[in-house]
Each structure stands twice: as structure tokens, then as C-alpha cells.
Amino acid sequence: MKISFKEIEILVSQLYGFDEPKVFLEQYETDGKTVSFFLQKAYQDLIQKYVVDLGCGTGILTFAAVLAGSKFVLGVDVDISALKIALKNKKILADLGFSLPVDFLCADVKNLYLKKKFDVCIMNPPFGIQRKGADRIFLKKAFEISDVVWCFLSQNSEPFVRKFSEENGFCVTSSFKTKIQLRRKFFFHKKDVEFLPVDIYRIERN
Ligand code: SAH
Image (cartoon, rainbow, N blue to C red; front, side, top):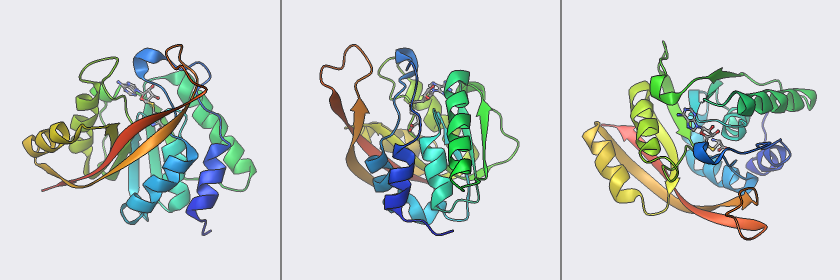
């Protein structure tokens, strides 16, 4: 079934987000508009591919990738309550007629061992704001298990990402700037709607 990015944006916007987001895990879900921006850029890498979504949370990027045409997507998250919401979202999509080849695994990315490699890794992980180095752990694991990585990181992370990628035999091939719309959830959010500037990177094995 062919489905447009706009339709995917609308579908994922209707899914459940985090119930009680955990600050130390930097939990916030990617909003629908950002999902469609991401798909426009990453589409060619996703179609017909085996994809892993590290730090998948409630599954927004997992579902987006598979709706856009990935063959299979595995979502991985350390938080079982987030994955329960992801399963609820899977059911909602199934009830709407989208029976999707996705699976979820509860694991800490740091200790993650996957038997199979994946074509592509996608991730909107913790940015390492609450726990320093969290972003590094995610990138390192992504480099271990796939040849192409699409990663959201905080704005102005480019020098770090380029250097870290090169040290690991990878190379940033493109980067894009956008803003994630955050719903007010954490006490330190002052407005009802906040925007978080992010960079999205495409990184490839040399
Ligand atoms: N990718 C989702 C969620 C982003 S929030 C989305 O785009 O909507 C970051 C996610 O990383 C959270 O769900 C959090 O639980 C998860 N996370 C944080 N540390 C982790 C770790 N060490 N291992 C696995 N998942 C982790």
C-alpha cells in the first residue's frame, strides 16, 4: 500500500506519546511534522531495508519507517513502559488496517547484542544533556550494527559527530537542521509548546 509522507505525518500524530516521560532518559517523542521532514530526507535509505530504531520510545520513527516502505523495523528501548505504549500504537495501526512488520526489544543500548546486522539504523536518542555521553553510546552501537545511520542530535553537534564518526570508520554525508515540537511535559518547559532545534545526520561506513 502506497502512503504519502503527509498521511504518515497524520497517522503518527494520532499515536500515544509517553505517559510519564522520564527526564533522565530524555524522553520526548518526535512530532509528526519532523517525522515527515525526516522521511523526505531518509526515504531512499529506508525503502525495502531492514532497519533498527535505537531508543525507539513509543515507536514513532519505527512506525514511520515501516509505513514509508522498510521491510522490517526493530525498535529497541530500555524502558518497558515506553514499549508497552509502542505495542498499543501497533494495535491502533493494525485496527486502522496497517498490519506492520515491526518488533520491539527491551534492552539497554549499551549492552545490546544483535545476532543480525541491519541495513540502516535510525535514532532520535538522548542527546546526552541529562547523562553525559549518552549520545556517544548510541552512535557507537549504531556503527557496530549497521552501515548507514540516520541520527537526530542537538544543534551544533556537527564537529563532534564528524570527528567521532571518522574515528570509527564512518563519514557524515549530509546534515539537516530542523526543530522538534515538544509538548509541555517537563517542569522546566515554560511554554505550552516548545521547539527544540536539532540536527539530523546521515552517516555512512567508509
Ligand atoms: N525515538 C523516539 C523517542 C526519543 S526519546 C522518538 O523519536 O519518538 C529517547 C529514547 O531513548 C527514550 O525512549 C528512552 O527511553 C530511550 N533511551 C534512553 N537511554 C537508553 C538506553 N541506554 N538504551 C535504550 N534506550 C534508551
